[in-house]
Length: 564
Image (cartoon, rainbow, N blue to C red; front, side, top):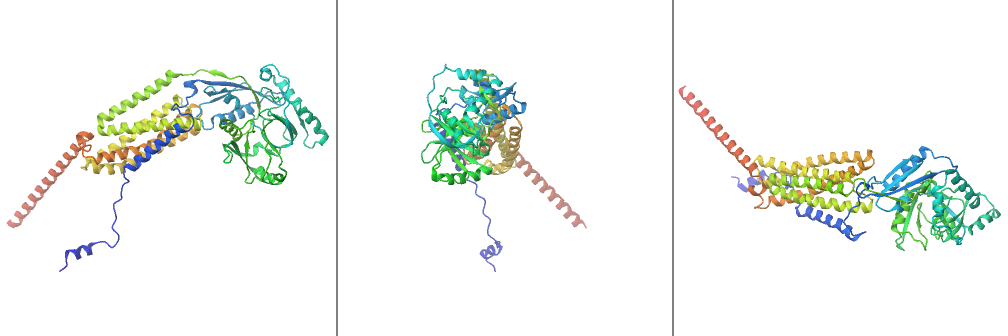
């Protein structure tokens, strides 16, 4: 006779027993989200200006407008193609990601730049032609102070200078400050004499700015106005720059601009530095006919990269290094420009419109919360907590993006945020309704939560994927404020997934494990539980009726058999 133990042994499958999959403890995702939130606000308070205010767009806070007047080498009017190309490059400089809220408009032969805030210097810096050349240094001397001129005389003359006069001034400067690349030593004597006559003061206007001939010798001032250089023909063109980025020197801590060359320049630079390092040859980086930096080559520089640093008297700052890297990254302008004085532009919509937009969003959010509390009760409270945490995360990220990539918040962006938060609430509804569907099948609240989540998360992933793809397409195809709308919509879509997975689901799991919160009268699922009970009673009655009918049929069959 076989014992029960041996029978059980015989019935056991040969393979390993499958273990039930363990769900991640709900405290882990909650802690992860709170840690991310702490990191975001830690970055806000411990890096940069310690303020919680986001950058606002032109339509909400106003801005600064600068008019750029194009000038050509031959004095002719610039072509529409040149102006459009210059506009495109300046837009990339000021608004590379399409979220800074700046505007560049072609008006006649002028470009009008409008940037948020009151920083007119930023708008003027965008007009740099950004023609970078690397030139060997032939000679250098301290700048000689020149007789002072009336204040703003040069600037006013430059801004009012007709194109024909500007072309003549460029030709005159080339004559006295440049010499052919194959010039002999005696031909450089006039240039050496010109070095003592150069006006390198900060207020001086340089008609040659951005229009020097790169294949000729050049007399140029340093950007700080303290030195004058005689430079040889260019050995590397700025168009051979693959990338430019700002950072700090790990040894000195000073701000520098790192350049990465491409093409022939990437091969030439290591060979040149290896050849000239024993002689400690001084090599200048010129930007728009002015020497930004003229370091001596102390050692070979491999890898096709190099760094530009400011002078000892005028070192780079974080702002100036980022501006220089920005203009070099997107290439030089096909034209040179004179910039007008900056003028303040009032907000097109103003603070009242901002308050109205925020009020509309707040009203919509409160309406959603009231509906959630009335319909879901305890789950509505979890919805409110999740939305508050989502709003805190979105706001902190917007503040950081304003510092890091120049993101400005305008009314279009606020609309994207409101729609995104509404989509987050919609994800909650999908999840809660899946839980109710499981409970209608007769499961308890605790057992319905993991099953409902397994079904809901697929829907949430699909819905948010569609929304993110739509936001990405709009961002790629649109221009102006519409890109800001698409950017905030995509941002809130990503955060929707984070909040649902890291906050809402863990909170619901905790609620399902609480004896108090699991009560139908508390969690708002009493009606669903009643439906489940009614279905169970109906199924039981149906089963009983089926059993009675089967017994009656059996009895009838037995009677017929007895009669036979």
